[in-house]
Length: 308
Image 1 (cartoon, rainbow, N blue to C red):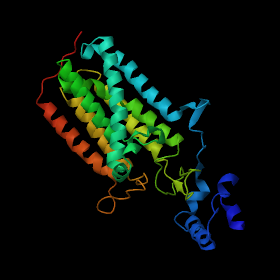
Image 2: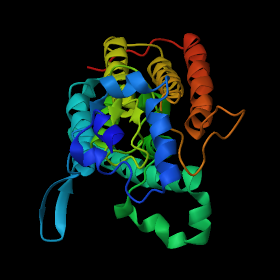
Image 3: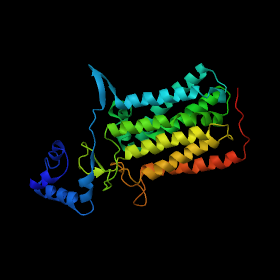
Image 4: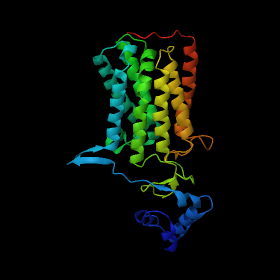
């Protein structure tokens, strides 16, 4: 009991540390807390504010932070796109259609990707689970594939070059990516690996109650803010066809591959190759290769002139 009180964490957190555990389990957890590699961890850790994932509800209907962040992403893409419509010479109505179908690609592709990349066994055992979107579960890589399918269909129907549409859409997406990672942080999901860095964070929903990297915030900064700054300013002047898309895909793949070293592997999968590669890194590797290839290909292209 004395050791429990010594742990520098809120009372409500300390009270959950040993609930339902055997005496041997309590001793094992205490050893984890107070060994030399993690002691400093608990002396300096931050505590997650434990924000309610539901902003408000009226009866059975409620607004969740995750849904709000999707709206923020779509609204940001629409607003930023309006500023650059002259780049591809399309009307506001056509652009609104592009954003709408892009949103469908994100949602449907993200859900399908999560099911196939991370929970394929569950889909086989329970096919209807795929449609239980209220239980959560989205994959960026699946959402990206969904958006690419939508962009190619849109380009084909409107007789436009799909690479031009990708170059136009690339800088519009990172704000939504960053907002989604902030929602992951609020929901206390996809947290990082245990660490002893000064900004290590304790997540109240973590069953092991370990101080971890707030990797959701790392991703929000890299995949959201930094990627947006890179692509928005790089594309401020006309570039060769494929350059913006290639840079965006390469940067995202590289950022995601890097952050995966700080993010806890998916519990159902763990490390999937070589004892250290995660599923996210496996899925990001083709992006790095494709982005670099598209950048090299763009060198041979003529600069795209801006339509006025």
